[in-house]
Length: 185
Length: 410
Image (cartoon, rainbow over all chains, first blue to last red; front, side, top):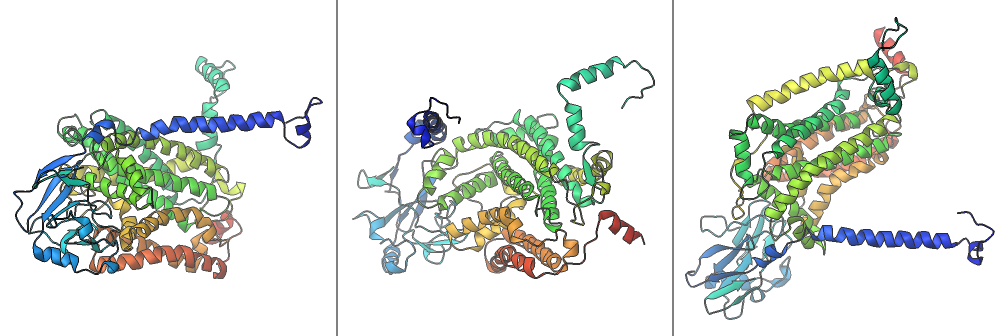
């Protein structure tokens, strides 16, 4: 930028009013572009109607001991297991420190409802549905679930025990609205 | 161009010159793909595959536009609209099979094109940026192919989309939010299919723009050649007619094979599970991606840690950006590098083996081989190539292309 005879004192230091104008204009341009891009990006996030489909109610009274079933919540499967005392015992006998994602079995079920395990049926590796709901399906090395895609084994608490998955199967937010009814979401 | 027997120019000639003076389109083409673009005289048939890949890009865009006229990107209609294309739309079966198999043959051409560049050292100075543009094209192709495979909304579409989008959940802290953003929901669902269709339509035109930059970067230094030495002007001949004819011949052979598959084995490269409509509650027992992703899928599965597996998979392609600095041997062509040539062959066989591993369940021998293969994939690039850059003694290079031709004739 040319310093004219009318240049100010700052010009001597290499800074001119034009530099100031340039920098503020670029800064405003960046902010303005960012403000325009955010609505575009955010439009890709779940829309209001998608978010509104976020609760599922389920009655547990028909679920017999040892039975596991799949219900649908937010378009994906949730496993509900009515665990046997043996399964609960196995889940609680584990040394927590040895787990990849250390969680006690107690923290994954609700107090007084220890037999009911409610977990999202999406492998924490890459999202396949683990097998093990039906008795005819493989249950993995720990009696819980087994993901066929990349070989992750989950125990009777839905915790990752072997294979590439980094985390335990997620426990969705849920509460008992009556003694036998759960509301997921 | 015209015979100047008459002193008077024809009306057509005048109109052409009038137009050319205002937009020199023919002149531009002549300089870039015609008689004024000099090319080394010794290019062999491996040099056909750039032009073949460009042709396949055209086939994909043309067939894709007509498919889009009959396709509905909605979860309840997508699968049926594809079946309608196959059964009811006039020649719909032909257009869809050309598109589905066209993707495979586009990748076949691109893989040969890439390996040709690696064998003859086309990534070495002064063609590094040309090489980068090529990798970018390949990356966008991979994205486009993946997005397109989701659109028929079969079981492999759905679960492929689930697995691939979940790769991003490996990113620490923001991974889950990114996956939700990609999905537009809490699982792969209608918003996902909708945006995948939009992006699948957009990205091929991004590829066209990148191809333009790729060819621009090619024309700055000019084409490499099988000897890998700089070609003197006297060793170059015009692109038109010499290499246009050669490319068209190679393209003809390629098209014969492509249409043999389209007509006689159109589902050979597909997966039967994709003729089952997507079911978000049932994962197929054995998920496999399309064949052209298999080596990278094998690398992903070779590593028993989610984040490291994802890093290795993306890294196996991104590392190609620094290939010109991993292999700094001054000789380009593998024809004069006997040791590199052997290692290159091993690396190619290793990549094919990884592809086989990727097609198998991740257990037993396939898992062991994929671990060895993934190790060697990187070891070749990170250890072998730099070592050879220092240690390998090349065979004597010919002084010029014509000298090597004359010697061979003796």
